[in-house]
Length: 305
Image (cartoon, rainbow, N blue to C red):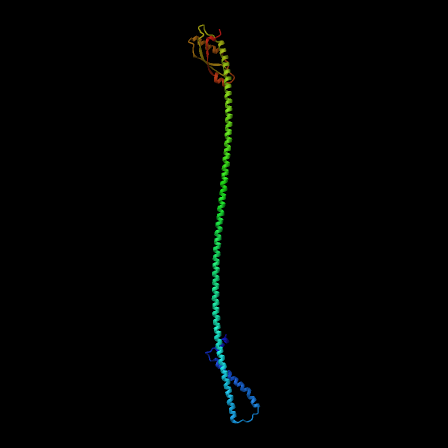
């Protein structure tokens, strides 16, 4: 570093370092030349020269030395100028190099900045593209979800409609079955009712026959025991109310409509009591309906004498 600083001072055109160095070198060169030529002159055996010749030689030698010094000085000056120009050129080159480096650095910085801006712009565009793709993807997913939800809702609706239709058909089928069952039951009920009515009519007819038969038997038995007085007339009638128990025993008998002759009325009452127990049906229902309490009319014209 110190050598470089000394070298810079040495080549400085405004410094006296170069002339001093050149002068020192010239003097040193002269001394060397003299030292080299001196022994030669001693070895030569010179003839005595005239005094004027010696002065001329010395003068010539001094001129040559001066000339050499001037030439050395010129060369030193030229070298100084060359060094100065070289320094100026080096400085110019350094400045140009520095300017070029600065410009290159600026260009590099500008290029780097442009690249960074381009990268930032590309990154921004990429982010924008990704955001758009994300938004588009989200929208597509949302639309797909909505479509799926709509399809699911439509499927549920169709399933509900199908279930409702099946339920409606089932209800219609059940109603039809119920209607058919009701109709069948109605028919059966009607049939049973008809059968019951027929059976009841048959039973009524049978009971009527049984009743008429039992009443005929009761009348016959009572008539067999009736002894009415001679004052009785064929057109006289006596209506009595008879109360029986299931065994046919007469527990009560009373006149509901008399003949107008007390003796005839009493004879009817006595005949009923004597005829006890009276014939009764084996059917308890028929007994309760017809023979628990019943009325019977008697007339002397039917009496047995």
